[in-house]
Image (cartoon, rainbow, N blue to C red; front, side, top):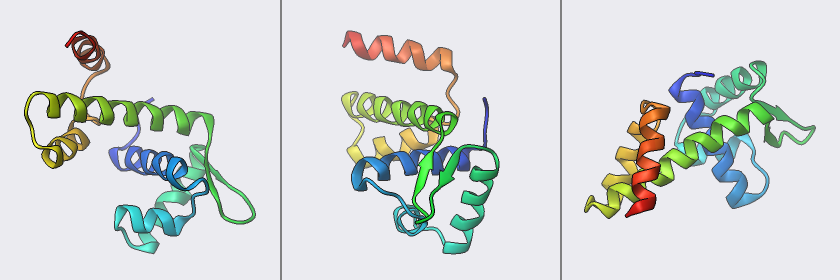
Length: 121
C-alpha cells in the first residue's frame, strides 16, 4: 500500500515515541516533529479515518496492524540506510537526514539489495 510521505512520517514517529515513552499522545508528536497542534490534529484525524491509528478514551494513540506494518517498514529503512551511510563515511547527522529523504522513495527491490549488501560488509 502506498501512502503519502507525510503519513509515513507520522506513523514512524508514533512507533518511535511508543518505544521511547510507552504511551503516545498528540502533544508528544507535536513536540517530536515540531509541528503545530492543529496540523498534528488534522493529520491524526486522517490517519484514524484511514484505519492506520486508533485512540482510546484517554487520547492515547495506537497503531493498527496496517499502521504498524507501514511504520515498521519505514523505520527499518531509516535504520539501515542511516547505518549504511555512516559506514561509508557520511557524518552521523547527514546520514540520518539523508536516510529520512531516501526511505520514502527507494523501491523495495533496491532496499532488499541494500540489505543484502549491508549484511555482507
